[in-house]
Figure 1 (spheres, one colour):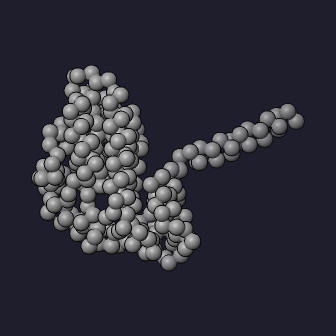
Figure 2 (cartoon, rainbow, N blue to C red):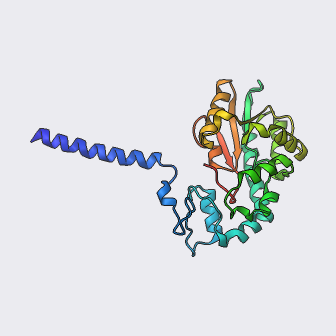
Figure 3 (cartoon, helix red, strand yellow):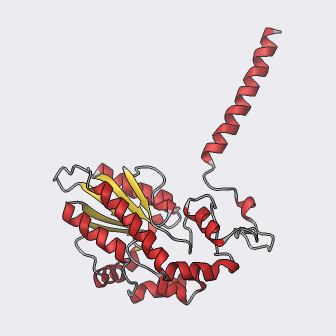
Length: 264
């Protein structure tokens, strides 16, 4: 009897442990849960009664998980947000919070006090591109976007440019970590310089060996390499949760707004 009771107890504990572990590990919802009723794989069906501002809130907080397109009925809202005062004000608020934190950091003066920036929708704005491509309502076209990158015409996000320069003055070492590929280095450097950015310590782009990695894994690995080189990553600015999640994370991470697309 005692052995039977112990055996049943072990089974219950195993089941409970497995269920708990899965709830912690599953950061993103399973793919099956993302299949829309219109048959578009990965395109979540948004309830018709969900306010577009509330939808954007779920996107920015990562509650929405993986999604592929802006709901058709929210395209006008996203356009107005991204081209109006609200996006600028939200970006300024993130920059102010970032700077307030940066001013509390005691820098060692050894050149290893790092602040990481993503590029797209963090330092540079691709709104001119998305103005002609549905503000996130169209399926991503990599070739079309690559052509836009090669033009090197993306403007700076004013709040981020100001933060960038103030972090420089404070003595932080600026490192750029982007999902752009190595073949786009020349165009990226030219675009950054034309937009007013300079004096970064390193520009890290995806190598061929990073091609099949998720953004979270790729950026985590690069941050770990920086830590192994002795860098202390005090801050990390990016528009995606994948810029900031994973391992070797910064002491403080700051997310900029982006309701146009998500990168896992």
